[in-house]
Length: 167
Image 1 (cartoon, helix red, strand yellow):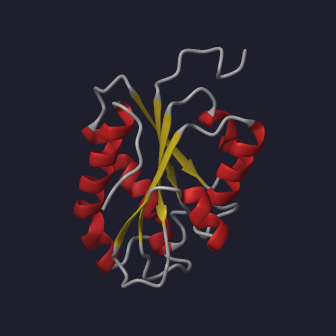
Image 2 (cartoon, rainbow, N blue to C red):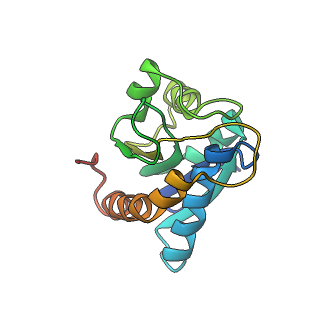
């Protein structure tokens, strides 16, 4: 039986990152906050994807939407919250995530295999420190409340009628 054969929640929240690389853990911390806020919502599954990379491909199958939570760098000030409506297109321009394979590689493989959900949004935070260390930097830790609000707003859109985010 494949995941497409099983009953899956329409929306997947996928936290990505490496907790041993400082601010790269923001996706995991944010996913945990979303899990606490949405624990009773049967439309949503929250997964700590860590550094599993392409091993997460099957998790995308059968979904209407996916919300990726990850570190995302475009050179902005550390702690800047990003909402990327087309993360696959953004990934073509730059890789994001300091872990194994990037979210862009996962999304590209999902598109190639036909399991990419119709709606896919990335909420990310600009990292300050991506090096071996435990814990988030002050700017990234300070961005958590804003990032959570943005993620929950986008999640409601995805769980309703999928549509890209607007800033």
